[in-house]
Length: 229
Length: 313
Image (cartoon, rainbow over all chains, first blue to last red):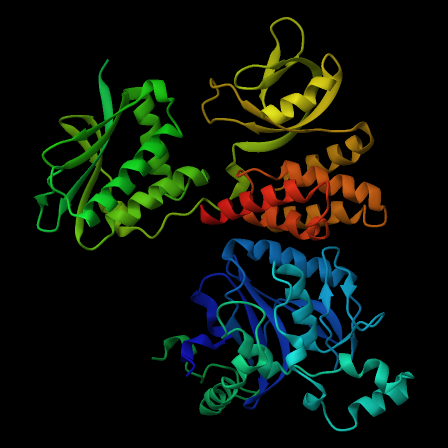
């Protein structure tokens, strides 16, 4: 069971400590976009791939986050500098692929899907995190497979971009904004396994439904998660 | 000479003094932790020849005793740490250790600065009430900085290894170094060299700055490094400093040999507890690919353990 205070509406995190968090924007009770949320020196910053890789200082009201326990508080300035350095060089293109992608020490993209910076908003955040942590992987990405993709996605992608399915299918997978925000609830050793977040998903959805979140909500009517017992 | 003291006294709940001759194992552990921390705290400021310690019988009391000017200095450091003004992570970590014991439920600790029998300044109350102490975030006031100095290298050696830059007359500076460094430096003896050093300055202007050797800088990267350091040292905002660090390393991305040389230099230079963990983490990050490099893995491992220590502080 998820402790309710573990998922926090970002705009309400004004009196908390510094953190690096996994944020997802919820349209209604289901998330549609993900970003990295960092609080440092009383300032909130977001790092995301939303059409382009960028930094934002206005976090939308519909953003909720879970705090990453794998990044030390005193490393937060280094994490911000790493994100900025990645954004300087990154040029991601959209696609449901994640193959151990990483933005390395030079902010240069690396993937097993050679020559392709194809990713989702979640993949972008995962690639930044992977480049920062000491461990080899943040999530055990091979736990996700093509079954997570929408029907016909790969066929269409290959037609449009001139690929053979057999060459790229091992790189294709969808790690959803819901899976992503759940990763912040997992403590302990890395990499995070899919099975350890699967049983958290219903609780998260339940939590969001309870609070009738929607993207037009200004957030004020929602009881801050941090104040609930 | 009149000695001043820092005194810690352990009483059990209900204010019965613990008998030093018959302590529970829990009380003994706690008391020993405090004794060790008090010893390390005072020795990090006062030379061991200038200080004595007393453990008193009848109750569990430990005191550090030193001449008033020196003990005054220790007290000021403690006060500055409690006030959140200290940047000295070593001192803060020792006080944190003492604070943790003071906060324990079943013990009553008294901790005071004793200028004389009639003048005692209590410290335990404020430590009990305050949160865990942390280092002052503002690096602006740091007394330690990275400096690039040029000089004629003279007299390498000594029991406590060091070398001198001689500027003629009586004008010289002494630079502390490790034995290993001293051996390497010998080949530059009587030559004009540029050294990258940590300069430690005290608020008291009478006390001479101390210099610690980091590395000798080769002429080919001298100018770039000078330019970088002049910006880096002037900047007080940690986030901007880290951007400068990334930008400087980025300049060499397309020149693998230069990049490697620069990272090798930074791995040595940033291996010091004066730096913020994020500064060291940034160097670790940028040198991730040298993790198993024959030439650098050993130094990088050392940098990693220094980084771990700065996290604990």
